[in-house]
Length: 314
Image 1: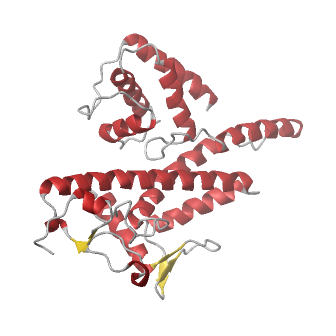
Image 2 (image 1 turned 30 degrees about the vertical axis):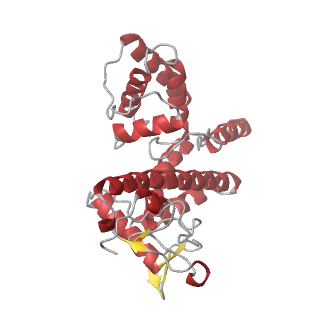
Image 3 (image 1 turned 180 degrees about the horizontal axis):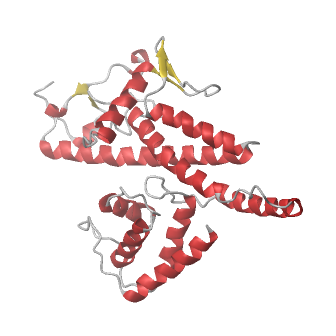
């Protein structure tokens, strides 16, 4: 097979399967796949596949984050003891992230009582490898394991371990921010009894807003929370007719919100630009991989006013 050259289309249509890809299939039903390595592609075709794999990974991660975030918010809202639920979720994900799960008989399970998260041993170890290599050792992520979207040799309902552990990392950040915001709605312990019911009603209204954020377009990889994402939308609306280009508008918003810790401090220009173009139809040239920072005084003052009003409510 090493002497046979294949194309991007051969991979994309599922005619061949990269040796690094995740594979789950019944050979009696679909037959055995044609396994190939990078040696079976020229550099141009290989680059196309790698780029597509990266895009597919980001799409998988976004979908998993949306599902996980919504599931967390729904359960938190329906829980009779939301603070207990939030703390348990954070401890569970922290145990997973810090490689504290216990493994026995091919199964890895949470050390926390009543936590039903379990993984098979191989899957768990692959999550830990990705965590160690990419998040701790700083090795640039590779997407070799991402299969073709048309491959019949991959169970599309099975989340890649690399996607799962990245979701865990992002959810820990989200829950930490969520918990901090929620605590600001808690009633004061020394409050007079006659005011308790009224305060409780206010708290419930505020809490409801927090538990039902605008999630359309929200991405926990970039924003510190749902309220922060809504601030981004307010800033975007405020500058709608004040700047002559999307590059200028989003450059100002990105740098301002990052400075104010609304956007995570480790978010890179390039990844945020890709997000803006995909989720907000931003008209930003492909060659633009980093925002310039030349804000006008009027636009800067506009964002400061929007931020001040938002801050007073949160």
